[in-house]
Amino acid sequence: MSPPNLLTLPWDNRHAIWVQLLPETVVHLSLIDSYRLVFSPCDPVKPRWMTRNDEEREEGSGRSFTERLTTPWGPHWRCEELDSRHKGPDSDAWSLMMTCKTLFEDMVGIFTEGAIHFVGLDALECLAFKHDQLTAQSRGTAATVLRYIRRVHVTLKVSLEFCKALEPRADTAGLDDDCQELLSSWRLIGKTLSHFENISSLHVWIDHSCPDKWESLDERSITAQLQGFAKGLPGGVDVTIQLPWLHPWHEDVERHFTEEEPLTKGFQIPRFIRHRKFVVPNIAPYIFEVEDFPYLAYDSLWWVESFPDPASLMAEERSSFAQGIDVAAANANWQEEISEICGQDCSWPPKHPEHPRPLIAHPAPVAWSDLLQRHNRLHKAIEEPMQVQWGVV
Image (cartoon, rainbow, N blue to C red; front, side):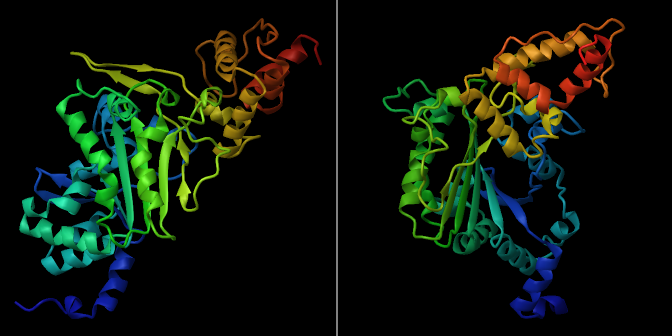
């Protein structure tokens, strides 16, 4: 049977058509059963207000909330569910690539022009070192990806023990086999990535799966292998290591990257907000929540009029800590006060009790009270009617 006319077109023409079908293509490449490389669609996390991605884990159908919290796919938990249902934002075009070998190879070529995401290190290692264990089709895929891939994204959601094992003089003797294997792979990450000859950007997202604060860890040691790889790269290659936010009072220049620290050109360390809910594994797993910096994130909508984007609210909170304000304690007291005034009714605008009392003098520096009065939408909505009723204004 002769191929369809479309597939006899020159590559440049086919390329132009595929780009229209798969605009801004971002995909995951996973290793299945140790011998098959499988592409799946990525549903990139769109810009959301502060904690929206975390809140969405609790919504919708699909996997349970506990599974979403514990998945190694981290912020790409949607992609894992799309993969398991063989769906995607471009499902029609995705089905097209599976119709014949030529189309599949064309699409793989398109994928390597965009970002390819890897969850964990096994698929990366397989591409670099273990072609012989793959199926014939996967070997062809691996060769194409290695030859042309330019943008590599890695999601690494690991155990707390893994992070601590990378610190100086850490004792790793008692770690389980999976953790030991991951440590070995991570220590070879520079060698692994060196096989991607045309790499132009590397983005690595790192977090651990426990409630322990990120600032308790030595992030310089955790990322040392990546730093070494970045230093050996030619100019024009961008390396981004995305890490959780640090509490401003616990930053340590010997263990952490600080905002004031100059970084090598092309090397970036953006921060993200850790999720606050964690699962205690048990016969009946249960979920608990911990507070963490930034403490204003989960009430960020009350601040949006004065701080319309996450960066400005984050800067204000860091500035408050720099002034000596314990934002964590002050905000917790403020939340208790709001609960007492409004009860369990969280409707907007807030309903006032029949005999309200004035807002108490807040047990925090004047600067915090001033911040609430000037910038917090909920504070204004509650305080102003009360002041009128009590004759304050």
